[in-house]
Image 1 (cartoon, rainbow, N blue to C red):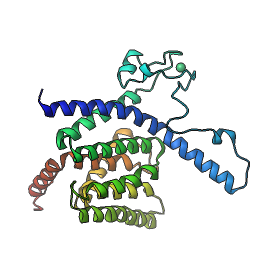
Image 2 (cartoon, rainbow, N blue to C red; image 1 turned 180 degrees about the vertical axis):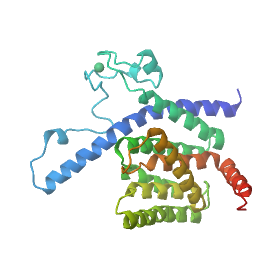
Image 3 (cartoon, rainbow, N blue to C red; image 1 turned 90 degrees about the horizontal axis):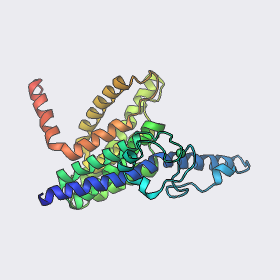
Image 4 (cartoon, protein in one colour; image 1 turned 45 degrees about the vertical axis):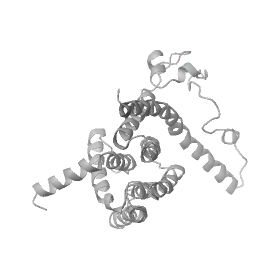
Length: 283
Ligand SMILES: [Zn+2]
């Protein structure tokens, strides 16, 4: 096995482990946010505190347990994918089915990590790319579940993208800064045009911050491609999922997928666009 393939393999294993942690983030972060909002609302309205909202609940506490029988998850039951297979997808204690999405998120993160190291290698760009991937996976599933893109994830992703492009990275720093600014403003303007014309909210503010983050990572010049690809992904997904009309479309997952694809396959994507523009006589 060549050294390169070894690093791709290590990245895949690391991705499985990080994916396991992301499952916790995806499940707990929205609950943590909701509890915080309820505490703040009660404090603002001078209402008595609610014991359930005051209990310690974060990414570490309480330890993982079966939601049905409360049996604690033992370390050997926490091995990504393997434990799910060994347990045949059921709680060891009460046999309640464990959602297949847990091993799916682990596998997806493992494959995505492998793809990043395959493309960029085991270096600074690769490491930044793994962080980029992990945050995008968390944002995708949180948005699918709750229609929220938490500031706790989108805003650090903006700063991290600017840092990434400070020395080496994906684009020169001025491109990254313009990417962050124009990423936010482009969807923000679209939101207001749509709202003035239809009177409806077509997107959430989280989408603007996510596109600002993608702009910070990938540069302003990639924004049209990201929006176009996200629209295609979104249209296909809403046909497949038969999303009910009138509901705001969860645009976050489509943006995250489009941005990640540009990060790992910018060359082929640019070639495909040039080919298509040439073919359609626009170039
Ligand atoms: Zn159980």
